[in-house]
Image (tube, rainbow, N blue to C red; front, top):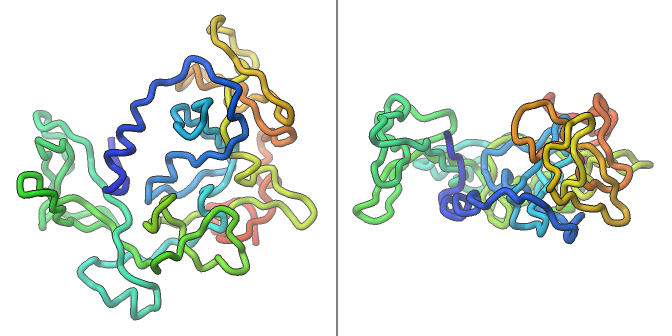
Length: 300
């Protein structure tokens, strides 16, 4: 298993990941905004409108469910971005010479390992205390990463992979970014000035006459499970399915195909009129105010 997270958030996210899967969900909080935990990873490329994501351990939602219902991009980066310019942390002039700000740390990459198993990739070694793969000056790092000495006290000093990109201080997009003034701003890890490391598609915003049902406020929010999947057997007679409040409808989001967690399949409360139809990924995202490449739906 590979972790790719900000060094400063390593402890926080590992704690947050141990929450138990709720056996039932509450009705309060449905429709409240939430930021999916994937967005706290600096190398996360963003969600795709062709897929749904159900985060079942969200501490931002009283229902514990942060629903991403066929949404494109990052909630916290409405306009998306082209891939940033990677830089060498030893070189402090390249970014400045190109008027791209400074060379700053973006992501940390470490492989989980078991010291007794010697299961680290070639060229890295498992640290017995941290139980992560460490590198040496001779290790060949993944693209965009450098082997960097991390000083955490004499007894815990290790070398790990880190990536660095050009970034202007404070130049981060926020929810509701203005396409006329914020197109040159970066996608950043939520609540920080740490830039992300990949290209990100801009959000679907609809057309001049019609708002897209796939925008962040229409497709990413706290929800709850309100029924089993169509055609599925009710294997949970004691499950306390929720009732959808006014303005929401109980609609199938994830069919039960016999794979993954059965308790996450089925119907969820979604905003009325925002159900995603199979094969509708193109027409559901006609226009984007921001970055678009061949991996994105929609156009400028």
